[in-house]
Length: 273
Ligand SMILES: Nc1ncnc2c1ncn2[C@@H]1O[C@H](COP(=O)(O)OP(=O)(O)OP(=O)(O)O)[C@@H](O)[C@H]1O
Ligand SMILES: [Mg+2]
Image 1 (cartoon, rainbow, N blue to C red):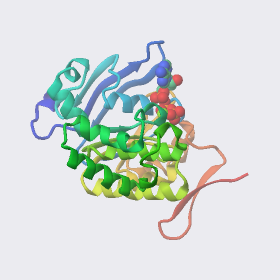
Image 2 (image 1 turned 120 degrees about the vertical axis):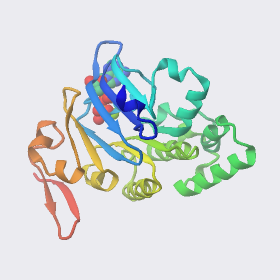
Image 3 (image 1 turned 30 degrees about the vertical axis):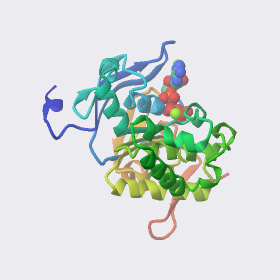
């Protein structure tokens, strides 16, 4: 593994020929090669069922390749390495994942406890935990719901709590599965601005989304999955998003769907009847 042995320059993630088959035989991702550098911001695009969430689960070490290998920071990421306490602690501290479905992510009896869970699990002292929870509650704007049970919140509120819980541990790598899906337009804007800031702070950020109009702001590179669960294209967002034939081919846009430029760099996607 020559690419992994180059100490100091090890990518955040390196995937070689990764295929994942679910236990029932469904292919999640097919023969995927990918290298993610530190501070890179990547957006995953693709039609429903093309493999975005599967890839994020693989990157978070929740599932392991059926074929191929995943390396993270120069070490193999598999069941065996994650069973080692030191590696596990380090990996979990470095990588945070906001799930597509917040329901499966939230388990505490209050929002406060939910956000405190990560820092507590990392062995932080109580004053530090309190400080972090307060900071994140304020950052995400959810102080008002801190004593409520997460399972009783609205979809968007749950998404914010899940995000807050991940931010509380200050991971270097953020994996975000459709983070804006349940958010109102103002909150979506806030999140996009925050992702831009986090990128400037040097985080590595991998986001799966269907919101084409935010892609250019939150990515340096786009990976488009085809419906065969293989990568159909990869490149800078400005290039790929203007390839209408490609976007049609991977079923990301409707034939009636097209893009306008309204002066300057302001760009919208519209659907016309
Ligand atoms: N738990 C599972 N068991 C079996 N097959 C699964 C499971 N989860 C996903 N799949 C299948 O794996 C493929 C990839 O699914 P995945 O959830 O990664 O897609 P996605 O790109 O995230 O889609 P979406 O945009 O709808 O979230 C699909 O064919 C899907 O049906
Ligand atoms: Mg998904």
